[in-house]
Structures are given as C-alpha cells and as structure tokens.
Image (cartoon, rainbow, N blue to C red; front, side, top):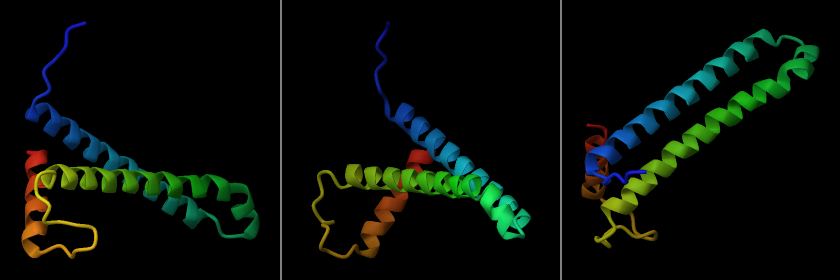
Amino acid sequence: MTKKKVTKEMLDELIEKFVSHAEEERDLALERYRRQDEMMTTPEDFVLQGKNTVEYLKTASERSNSLLNVAKMIKDIVYAKNESVEDDKEMTDDDKKEIIKAIRESGS
C-alpha cells in the first residue's frame, strides 16, 4: 500500500465532495418528508406512515449537523493560531469575512 501525501487540494476536494453529498442527502430527505406528509390525510395514515416520515426528518437533521460540524472544523483550523475568536467573545465582521473566505477557498 502506497502512502499518499495529503495536500491542500486533496483536502479541498474532500470537503467539497462531503458538503455536496451532505446537502444532496439533506434535500432529498426533506423532499421525501414533504411528499409523505402531503399524502397523510387521516390519523390512520399517520399511524401507518409516521415512523418512516420521522426518519426522513432525522436524516435531514443529521446532514445539517454534519455541515455545521464541517463549518466549525474550518473555523478551528482558520483560528488555530489566532486567538481573536473566543467562546465568550462576539465575532467581528472581519472574523466572519475570514471564515467565509476560508469556506469559499475550500470549495474552489
């Protein structure tokens, strides 16, 4: 097994693929939830279909949480050497711009 050197480009591609797939999975789960919800018109429908419908929402929530975790990871990397962002300190506009720039750069 040959070891590959991890490059910025490889990490960028991995993050981009993850974000794309997570968004697709979340959107698909929400669409399926909406379709299922529209079809449930009686209490009996909910009893028969409710469990599956709730699973769609759980999947969408998990994907959203995964996306949030990636954003937090990027923030931690961006500010690893810069202590200007602390938990008890409000983020400045410059801090937010730097995070947005890092996220955009990770997708290009």
